[in-house]
Length: 425
Figure (cartoon, rainbow, N blue to C red):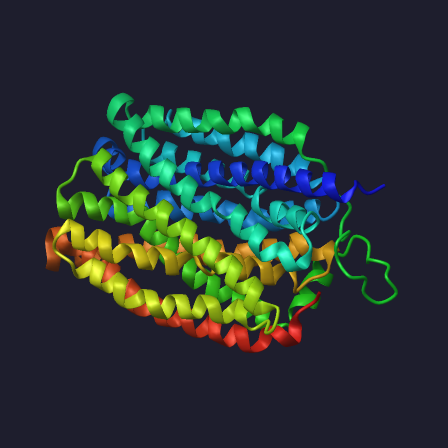
């Protein structure tokens, strides 16, 4: 029996709060490596390419590849059980990063974090889609993804504070402990809802039971909007993950700041710009998308068009105040894609396929975005070292921005043209 509307409304926001908290911890554990890269590089004597491999590709390879089989389980089993176990695993593995004494050991620990986090995101998207009706999903997913800027900012801030006072190893251990505490609370508080309870019936009104992965792929293959959204988001993620990982090192190197001051500067930009951008993207796509589903692609496209000149200005600025001022708008524009993209994927597959469709989307986004994003910046930085010396990372950032901002904007615009024909209410 369904709960009363009053209880249902109150409880679904409780669920959203707890899932957003888990999402926040997910990104704290994922992004803390960006601010800790400076002491880790000094302690373990790593190159920029090794840092990039550890911070991006090592995490992405298992995170992306295991996301699909875990999502297959989530389309059949209790999603909240999967999310709770995943939270416990990624948090314990984050804590284990603090025990590493070599590049190989830290690389293995980061691989393990990716294994745990593979079970968190796609089941969460699917679960929320059964707590919020279609007209509110963009905003609900925007609130969920607030965990990204909040978690990233807290990871930067707490990571730097812990590192300077207790060492980088303690930072990993203390952050991992938070998720170990949250995991059983999630399991006890969040209930598993009926799948598709808020969606309009399709066909004869009987949902298809347990679709195979082949059926999911065959459903998605003829939908150009899904693939355009996925590859546009992969390009956006290369920028997002790459900049999140390398901006702390860039600010630290180019402006001669302490680790803690660097974290204050970037965490402020991350949380202010990220919260504004995510909520703005969610509200705009829900409001404009009510009249034209193409808005779910056009809103991110416009964001990247606006953000590019400001990102270039930030990379070229010589003084810290100018750099900070120019970085705020790219931070807003650079996350506006998340709620529209994730929400649109939920509407391109029926309820019994949502977790699997989300996992395929995340596989593309993270294998390319997270795996190649940090590596592109780090590899270019090492390549430019002979020509630009200490300024090599600045020119690596400029190169990636000039290529990926226009590409991302074009792909989202093309997706906007196809969404209306592929959309499912």
